[in-house]
Amino acid sequence: MQDLIANPGDLPRSKNPEELAKADPRQRAWIEVNPFAVEANCHSLRRYLCKGCDLMAVVKADGYGHGAVAVAKAALQGGAKSLGVATLLEGIELRQAGLTAPVLVLGNLTHAEDLRACLNWQLMPTLSSMREALLCQNLADGSGREFSVQLKIDTGMSRLGCELKEAPRLVDAIAHLNQLDLKGVYSHLALADGALQGEAALITGQQQQAFETVLRSLPTQGNQLCKHLANSAGTLRDHGLHYDMVRVGLALYGHSPNKHLQGKVDLKPALSVKARVTLIRDVPAGTGVSYGHRFTTQRPTRLAIVGIGYADGVSRSLSGRIFAIADGQLLPQVGAITMDQLILDATDHPEIEVGSIVTLLGQDGDACITPQQWTDVSGSIPWEVLCSFKHRLPRIVI
Ligand SMILES: Cc1ncc(COP(=O)(O)O)c(C=O)c1O
Image (cartoon, rainbow, N blue to C red; front, side, top):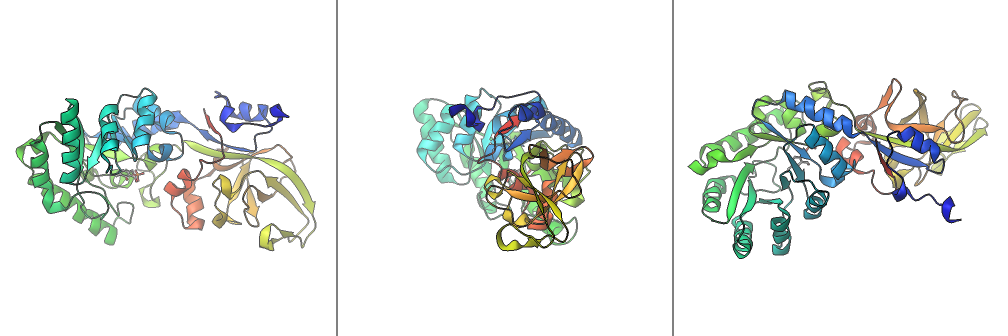
């Protein structure tokens, strides 16, 4: 019995995931991650950046669901100079994997113990206030080591960061805390993925102006600081937003934040979602399909039942509005997506059989399904789509 139970966590790493999946016909669904795509995306992004501007690879949320360590290694290979995470544990994971590049923790760490761990693991915390700066100073004082930190300034996101008018005073005060090494000042854009005209342009321009006003009023020690503002959207939107570094997440993984920013940089999607057909059913016209019978067959229909559902990250809100690719052909998904399974109309594809592999996201032959296509119908965003594949699906790194 034991060896009939596939343990996704035990799936070996393979150079050829198709072969691996075929070799393990029990595997119902999985994710394939291509780190070479991440590396290539870094090269392309770096070519696009202003001269002297560095690339930070944002690998928080387990590398947007791709696997933080694999993605971080690929990004560094592609020329990224530093890594961005959201939490302390995400940073520690990178250090435990042996990565020595600078790591900035983008989230706020409020407890002394977390900040002490940052110091020990050589992770840079983001400071938003004098309170955190003093905590860091005390911890570093006790350890006899310098503590590298960065200061975040709120220019209009109303999330993390100090008040605009406080920034010059804080930079000065932090510079006088002898155990702190202030490495950078940064802010975050709220609407950079919006249209190139109108409100998004106005707000982004206002944030940029606010950032520059702060930069101009920094004390002299501010000259050496790394100044950064742009996420993927800011990076692709306007070279004027690049400064000394850009913090890129979504584009690293091969996706554009919005349609109007597509094509500015050649980006290759790094993740595919695949699943196997587990049953074929031939049903007559007039058959209700799945919960709620939201779909009724209009003709004698060949249904292919596929072993992936919303508990794997294929949102129920996509029901009846997406396709899967089999051998380069698009098959419509029909009826409600259920927790563990979804159903395809395979009537026009008689070659599909039990065990056939279908692609829910990614490229197969000339056909490609992107997170953007899903979000066009679900109202979600590509970031959320990518981050939702992490519970039950094994990840195969090509
Ligand atoms: C502070 C900060 N910088 C950069 C990023 C990267 O954003 P994106 O994935 O849009 O490139 C994020 C992501 O949310 C962020 O929170």
